[in-house]
Image 1 (cartoon, rainbow, N blue to C red):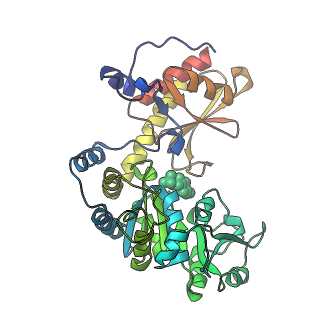
Image 2 (image 1 turned 120 degrees about the horizontal axis):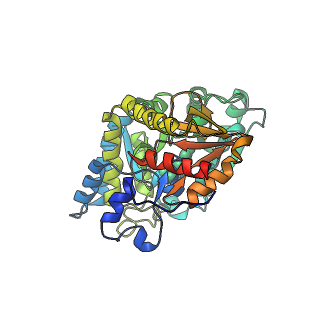
Image 3 (image 1 turned 90 degrees about the horizontal axis):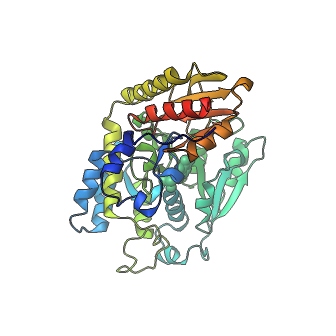
Length: 398
Ligand SMILES: *Cc1c(COP(=O)(O)O)cnc(C)c1O
């Protein structure tokens, strides 16, 4: 499995190498073709020319950040069907700031004291046991006490209702886990919480396809909903929180603005934003609502078919079009990836091929899952699928 000599740059690399070396390569970093999908560790997404132009334009002047956040929030809220919204440094920050807002309300002294919860009575971060997930850690940043309800077998309505008592500050609900067997649904959980005066904070970071999906969570009773812009073509470091006027106003009080000029040294100061990012989060979402999503999926399918055409005759390979989901499962439809199995006669395994592609030139990042190599097209730039096919042939044929 020798790594063949590069025959000359193509695709994005051809364009890159013609320009001055001021970007990634001048820092000694190798640009890579991302055939994994949207991953924070690979840079999130690639910004469209329109988003990039809006960022560039916003860079030309100063602006009141409080005004920009307020007015951009109105635009986001209109799109996702809530009273108000606010840009944050990603969905993770949205979870932290939203949780903080639920615990403190408009108590400025509490904004300053967090993660010290002194004086606050509603400090429980209530979550169903089968909803525990990586990002609940971001809610705990506030100092709040995570309270798991139920057990590995599930959570009943009665158990959840009992946990939403006088010390409950917020109900945390990861929307991608809604409907998991044994759990209380978002609609029922939000109703229980409401009846007890507890706000529901939903993480819907990647639930944006089709875009109208983004309206579903507030409609189901969520008070706050967190989205990540990395999943809709916006900045890797962007996202927003949407919800009721009162809670978004509280987030505004607690976030990074007015730390110097206002009365309180607020909890949210480390979650600072650039005006360029704020503008990009909004313009990317407007674009997301405007584009033809069927055409977007058809584009993935076309790339998948081109790669399959190029490699399916190779000995020992089992090649199939599949869907690779954002929670890393392989499904039949809709198709956005090639799944490649390596039979014994190929003399290869998916881990070795994944490594060879990553270490080759150009570097190509792929995923391995259940003994298969996944080549996902969501983040593959037009034309780069040909480089992927060529490299796969080289690695497999040796
Ligand atoms: C990526 C992700 C987040 C965090 O979003 P950022 O915008 O990267 O902070 C939160 N929740 C889920 C489910 C995610 O996939």
